[in-house]
Image (tube, rainbow, N blue to C red; front, top):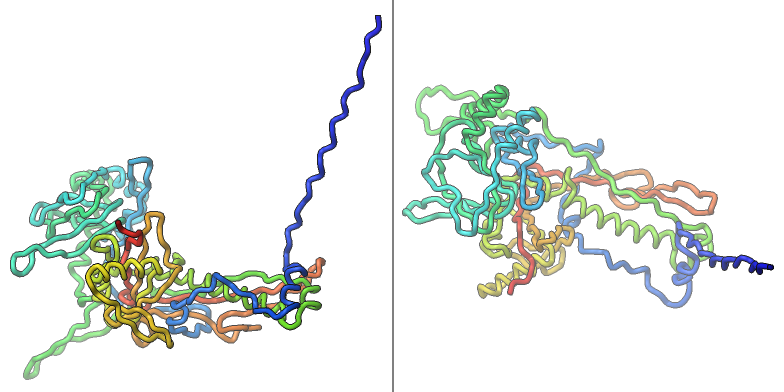
Length: 476
């Protein structure tokens, strides 16, 4: 009995997969588009008006560092507190408690962790009162989310709005130093999530950590004993209106012992051009020059983005917390911009995302108000109270469709905001920007290092103000 055995089937060969080569420089095909026909220079849609770069006065910084000397200030900063959220549960980051005025500079992680564990989460509905004016202040409150209005009694007995608090703000910090009374009524404007620390809980932690109690009392007493002016700076004792041989007080202007220094930041890229392109396709337009021109435009766009958003020197991150306010109702209203302008002398410019400007225009239309215009470098710019409202697309719009409006005063002589750069660089192309030849590699690609050096300095805190949580979403 024979058994037929069929030969095993040979698997079909797999089709070859083409490996796409990643180009490192401009192709000759693209370069030819500039070498034939009547043509334009390469256009770039990403170029914006860059009003912030144009309006800032730029100060030469030869040493690469700019030091801002200020009068000594004894006001302990009211920082923003950061939280972590897990589902519906919100917790404060222990180290962030050092942003509270009486905990500023306290760095014992164990004590701060014990204190953070004592906070209790509370939810409030719009219109609900959190604390009543005149009642015993027995809690410290941290606002994890939402908006709260501080209400007080006016000169004629009517209710007066004293201020607004938003995400990351805190109130009741004086409770840590001893018994006190609420000097205002706090009422929720939106749904609010708070973390509350009872004074009894703080006392229990302070009994365990003596260094915590000592730190709080030292700051509390220090703030009460030092004389300050209305800006919180060390007071200069003066005498006025006296007659005869009155003994005059001695005085001097004290300075900050550790003034802030701004180092120049850098934005860089390596521009690559193939020698074949540079040799053969340079008529009528120089390929290297066109590549460099577009690269510089992109670097300048990034420079403006950093001046707004950089954590170290960007205007949004470095605006003083006392110079930040919340909107009345969500969208930017004339009342909001009036409040923003009233916080400083000589506000010269307002910067906002174009959508925020449109939202402000809609609010003006609802009230029958017309925006005026002013001339800025030959451009007619919409203005409010004579202050130009300049578009700046680098100001972010959050996922919740909210943005910010920035008000600034500029100039060294005006104690405002200044841009920092250094001119006279090797191979400089524009002020503060250079292009340096790096060589030709084995693939015949020419490399150029293009660098822009810049920073910004806020000379005094009130030079920059921010209107936060500006709603830009169209309202029904």
